Amino acid sequence: MTERLYYTSPYTTTWQTTITGVTAERDRYLITLEKTAFYPEGGGQPSDYGTINGMPVIDVFENNQEIYHVTSEKPKGEIAACEIDWNRRFDHMQHHSGQHLLSAVCLNLYGAETIGFHLGTDTVTIDLAIQELSLQQIMDIEINANQLIQSNASISAYYVDENELQKLPLRKIPNVAEDIRIVDMFHIDLSACCGTHVRQTGEIGLIKILKTEKQKQKLRIYFVCGNRAISDYQASHNIVRNVADTFQTNRDSILNRISGLKDELTSTQKELAQAKSQLATYKAQTLIDQISHNTLFHMSDDEYISDLQLIASHIFKICNPLIVCGSKIEKKILLIQQGSTAHHCGQLIKELAPLYNGKGGGNAKQAQVSLQSEKDLLGLFQALKTELTNTALINNSVE
Image (tube, rainbow, N blue to C red; front, side):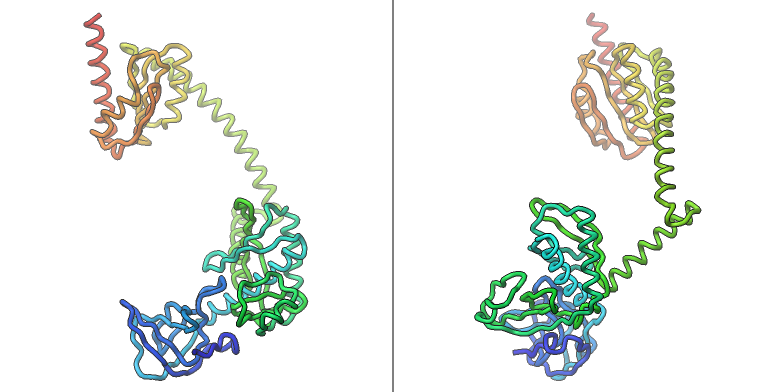
């Protein structure tokens, strides 16, 4: 069995050992070592990366109490010079210890038990068996957690048997009966855990809660620790500084400036809506003169479909034609009516749009289609015009 240096000496980064086995598996090799500091994925903690004789170790996993190191090349010789990616390992140690501390604080302050933990490259989360925490409660948790980090409490690990386990005030009882490893965060947390941890809470650095997210009957907390928390602060600070520079103000005045701009935007949007309505009324009156056989065709160079819908609403205040309009800006066609004609807008689109690579649909009163090019747009528009005009002429001749 491999000697596990990541338990006995978790700060070891380089070592030499003997290769005890190499197994070829498809396009990779599974290497076993006499002793290893490479942590295998487990307990919510990802595996370590690093090198063996200069070859990248791309995964580490445990199977039947044996540790397998995955490489894409076959190692040469029997001696392995090993090195772990310390930045990755220490990041995992900071976050795993940080999770224990944060879970303990959530339980102690608000009785919120941790029922899930995820340590990823991009996100780190705990799931709490509670539906909601207020912003003030989240802030209290964060303050308390960082005070405990600053206390620099010791963190140790040891093994107990099943009988000893029953006497310990664990945060959560494990589902194992042997090789029970306890991580003891002095006077803060006592938990069964197989992960790697820092030696003292001060090495966690700091904890920053990023956000919370409700998920059915639980609450997910996103957080970062240590170096990741510093990187997050630097990124956030750069954003705030750039926004302040843009508004030519200081950090304390940014929210007031944004609030003022929001009020100005709301006022401007109201004025714009009024102006658009007035313009739509004028355009509606102009287009009414172009209605023929209770149908209006209009292709716009500079209007969006939303603008054309507004114009149509003003036309319907005066008369009830079938309106076929197109937007060159969006490469879209809109068919809309108030039910005053026998045509089915959605059916017309269904029949003709595929001939011009169009995608869309609708119902009897309204349909919309998107085209890939202006050529297709104009082609479908002309096809609709021809179809509806011919239908109108036929109906008139019958009458």
